Amino acid sequence: MQAIETDALIIGAGPVGLFQAFELGLLEIQAHIIDALPEAGGQCMALYPNKPIYDIPGIPVCTGRELTHNLLRQIAPFNPPMHLGQAVMELRQEQDSRFFIHTTAGQSFISKLIFIAAGVGAFQARKLALDGIADFENKQLFYHLEEPEQFNQRTLVICGGDETALAWAIHFASTAKHVTLVHRRNEFKAEKDILDRFHDLCAAGKITLCVGQATGYTSQDGQLSALEVEDIDGHSQTIPLDALFVFFGLSPKLGPIADWGLALTRKQIAVDTARFESSIPGIFAVGDINTYAGKKKLILSGFHEAALAAFAAAEAIFPDRPVQLQYTTTSPKLHQLLGLQKPA
Image 1 (cartoon, helix red, strand yellow):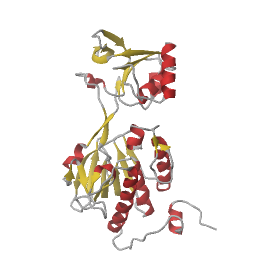
Image 2 (cartoon, helix red, strand yellow):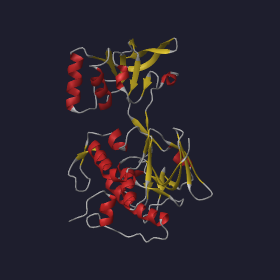
Image 3 (cartoon, rainbow, N blue to C red):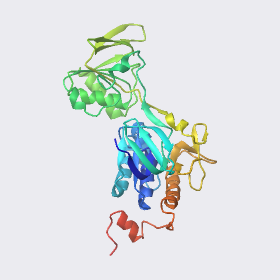
């Protein structure tokens, strides 16, 4: 696979990474975005898509999903290519000072600048801790879903007790042959309307609730055939299945970033507060992944950091051109970049 060449590569598609693309776009720097999650939005989409956020300037309240969608609309004029569902595994600096990046999907990039907006690290699904069950991943065992229609009229088991697990159980209640939800206790973390719908479907026999923990599994002819579950009293049962979905949430891991030679403080990237550049020139860090005196882990702080990092990037990308501060309210050039009509 041929390496993609670009001026800037943003690692992380959370709110700060998306706004970084916007700020770079205003300065005519095209960027590519990489994220380990299958959709943009970072923590906002992975952890609290429906929870209200109250501290975004000018927006009294919005959900994580709404904030993500608005940011995607905002960067649309610059059309930054997104490479989702893949994590950066290798980063090295070449002799010409550009950076070579290789991902878990086998894609390579060569970029003049790197912007690490990885939040508290790359989010990875919490796995089901049963020996050997990983052999069935992406065959019959899934930690996220992209094509639910392939499971129509199948016998499904879903493990988890958060909103994602319940929402998928509700969805499959009308399409699958049978749905069983396995959770360690009879308490769930979800919005009231989802809880009400889930309990109604359980009462109607459309979903079977099994309170307990997975302790094993059975397979036949190389196929996963059942999940073994034990309740708090030690009673076991075997639940037949065609496919198993596990939604135990996500956990952040710093991962390979720790091996890139960056100065770190408590697993965070040390930066200056004028450019938000790391100890390696050309690599910037914005958002929760960085640290400096007075650092506050707020989305609005990350937006500020992204703006200053973008201006520093413009100085590096266009060394012979003065970088001017322009305002989106009045600048004809910025209006053109944003695809707006010129004021009458």
